[in-house]
Amino acid sequence: MGQYLLRRLLLSVPVLFVVSVVIFAGVRMIPGDVCRLVLQTPDVDQAQCDRVLRGLGLDKPAVTQYLHWSGNVLRGDFGVSMISHRSVWGEIQDRMALTGELAVLAAAIAVILAAPIGIYSALRQDQFADYGLRILTVGWLSMPAFFVATLLITFPAKWWGYSPPVGYVPPWIDPLKNLQQLYLPAISLALSLSATLARLTRSSMLEVLHQDYVRTARAKGLRDGIVMFRHALKNAMLPIVTLFGLQLGFLLGGTVVLESVYALPGLGTLLLNSVITKDYTQIQGVVLFFAVIIILINLLVDMSYAWLDPRVKYG
Image (cartoon, rainbow, N blue to C red; front, side, top):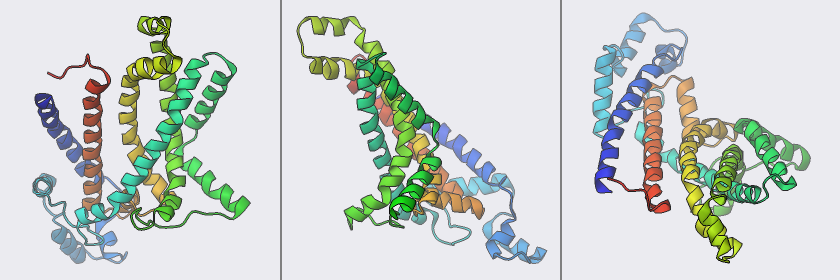
């Protein structure tokens, strides 16, 4: 196990290298004049622009800029925001709690919705309930998160005059207000993920329920609940956990739009504002942070296989 973990961590290094190169090159393709954005005025002469570029280190060759930035990152220095002049890592630390809580809450809602729907649909294969639940999940899957978010803001406000509190209060300060601020965004994020997980849960359960060991367990007189949860569900979990790990990456990406719709000051809003203002250093820091989190999530998913299936061995 230790050797496998070490090997996976070492393989993550080239992945992060490629991600860093793509980020570094991609942000420089964003349209817009850095000088005017930094000085916040359209009237900029060449001398002012040269001073700004020189101060930001953007007058040097791209390779030199990348080596300087990546070297600082390896030392734990993500740089300073070009617009706010605050520490990039400090901005990430201030906002990561909100985005992390939103992603965890959305993932929890998705699992709570998907597991019963997928299991019940598999048990009622080709019956009316199965058809109804499959139609429901297809409907959820076809609605983008930002569209669901718009509906959840518009209709309660129009019908009942209700709108969620604006901003963010940490759960350790006011748990109730924190939940009021995040439950609608979490539902908006969770619906599409829950639909995908429910459909895969149904397919995996149907495959497992027709296996010989399940029929043997039933023939021995075991109760349906024991057969379902102890024998069938655990063996059907491998593809579900794999998809769940992959979908968590898309979940983090979805926070970019959802936080803006609900005016939440998280990493998604920070990234979107940084793209609009062409804040190179802030974009690079946030995207690289997301990349590290996604790599760690996939590593945890791979490590869970041995617990779910004893036949899986890590050499």
